[in-house]
Amino acid sequence: PGTKKVHVILNYKEKNVLINKDIRCKDDVYTHVYTLIIKPDNTYEVQIDGEKIEHGDLEADWDLLAPKKIKDPNAKKPEDWDEQATIPDPDDKKPEDWDKPEHISDPEATKPEDWDDEMDGEWEPPQIDNPDYKGEWAPKQIDN
Image (tube, rainbow, N blue to C red):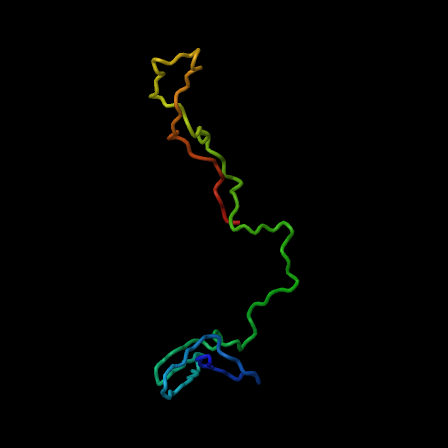
């Protein structure tokens, strides 16, 4: 039970450095020729039986050089740091015609002829959805 992985190792400054990519080896009963070609322009090519399997840049695919950026161990987020990707736009104002009720009285409804105000109470027309209702207003979101 092996890893079935091709191990491409470079010796750099007295250290063995393994490639960062996962290269799968051929999984059969035959013998294969594995070839590593390192070119003068700092690129490489891995071949199995003369067929190019992987290629790339030496600096990108091996950890040969120190990282270009490192984390500052003393860096801390400010106390008032906001993690949200977007925030409400403080300059966004609600349109004047926004506040419309969700339901309105049906303008086509009429009071039934057999309605008795003393017995049934004051007649109120049925409510329908307001076509001008725009929902609850919220300011647009902007990048934080």
